Length: 287
Image (spheres, rainbow, N blue to C red):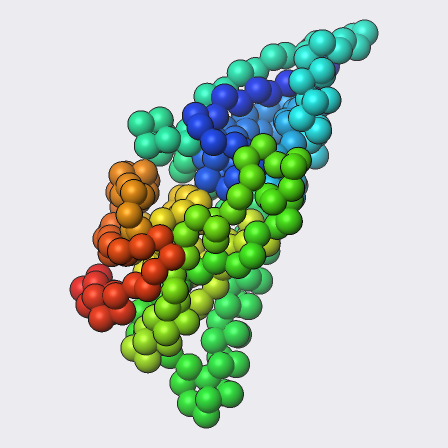
């Protein structure tokens, strides 16, 4: 048996902060999971040290790898200088995948297959929860809740207070930058024609987010970090990205196309304005 070792991972994400979901999921989570796949069954590897990503930490812990040790950012930086007798410390520097020119769908698929297998029971429970909630709506209204294509219509909830604190690497939240003024009206209009699960990603477990994107035939969401979850969606799924001014379609169009997801966009005139409901319905019917 070889000498025991610990792995100290430094991930160079491409932009933003890994405390925010897009950069966390594609910039840190996927690269770290690919390391876990390589070393999880190697007995000599004792620990995989990863920096804290604040409120994202429970999502990494959810995959249940006992070797992962999440360290506060300052302690993680100091760990590379620590040495234990009889234990090697391997420095591993990884490049983040959080940018369309750096997407690697082979690594995405490898990581998502692993995570979906690890979380299969939890994902199944979340899928049942979604179906049960829709059935409950149907009973309450005295008939079928919905019918036809299954639509996940992603809205925005209030952010974790951390993102508005001085401790956050980048302050601010998605609902401060963008929102849909007539989200409820749009959800109701969609619900008259399709099976609609109106939901938000804030505060959701990883298993819940995977389940939502696996469940849906069509995903509708405003431009934002939640669309990074397209890596969990089924090939052949449709996505409608609601694009406010300045936002670019390139990142999520490229991400979608790499997974065989059919990308569509609907332009929004203001970052906090209403969406054109009739046009949204037309695009949804076309998919």
